[in-house]
Length: 577
Image (cartoon, rainbow, N blue to C red):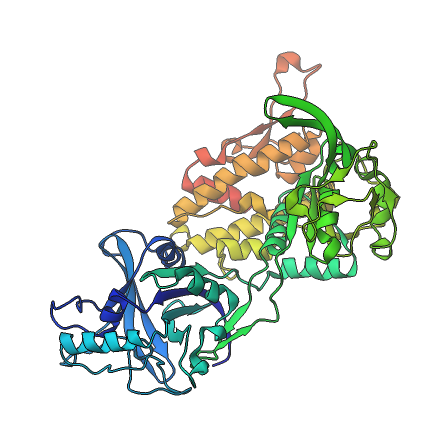
């Protein structure tokens, strides 16, 4: 096999009950009574999270415990108030030993041997086994048992043993070979007969995140623009998480006995991210620096306060990665909020150009968490480091807020994020080959999902034709459509249509019923609709008494209140070209 990313690791100190339980079973004598190791506390939560197990009797997950040259069946399961890792005894065997070989003592060892635990591992009585354990402990090697779950291997666990103080000639099994985060577990555990475990953040990134990172390498300023509900805020959140927790990127080679660990090329140092939301009251004082109220105890004073831009600039001044997220970018006056720092944004001005910060004759200090090499006092001359990325986002359909001027726009790489029918199809598990003209009894939940995808696509085609692509609807509007049956899924789609689609369009087009009629396929004002009671939208007839002044108005039906057949018929009609 090739080295594979690690998803989780558990470590046990090889002492106390752990030594007896991995040695073997001798009836009820002297604690040699178990075929498992206990996993309690936070280490148990790792099992719970990764395998979806609940803390309840009967909860278990079968797996294969592997090491180079061998394997044994086992399982995680809940027992007596904790999770345990159990290995199955060989049926028909009269020998007491059954633990995975890397966790058992052997008479000799070398770099190819599965276990570095030197001792008599073949005792057939509890007394002899205890004597073997006492002799092993006298050599004081401080041994640790390790279990590794690889990403994508939900039914396999790889096991090894390591020595913190290996005897001469046994450095091949030293804990120095372990990655830093596992060594920290070992050092934290010491000689406590317990288990510690941890999950490893995934060092890989989504395609959309990687695309944004690639653009930020070219230009440290990125602007995401598109209709609401297309995933801009989701991408901002993913970027912030990636900067702060980029993933350790540890690899493990199951074919190697001890030197199985390596660092992934994707590993990166954690950075810091801050998110702000622009609004009409947000100012330069909030983002950069200003005189703002400060509370200390019961007293309120006014002092110089540095904002997120200055804080992150100081944090990134020693080469660390920092990310400033500016959401709802055009909802405030972006040019005024950035002020003179606008001149520092260009890539070729980073680490070079400076502006003088208004300090009002007072010292400038950033919070301790943003200090560079422990230094929190900063110069009044501000420069933006190359390692400070700025990512902004704005809705393209909002015409009621401040426009962006040319000087601001040219400093950002602009990425348009539009509705993605592929992403929606994957989320809903739609069947692209579903026959939407089939009889209802042949429909499945994946057929309804495909109807949802088709409906959004056709709806947006009409919106783009009448209003422009900036006003199309994002795939998040149908993101939660689904159900245990096709009937439930169809009802969910009808509800999403009523609550998300129709209400959004009515608010956006409250003064333009003709366009709304076209988008919702309500027909012409002069058209008489015989089946108005089942249509999502239709033209209501005017009262003859008000004929001189009245005009037809759009009327709306709640599809979620109709029967299944009527829902299906109307949603299919709305999904028509």
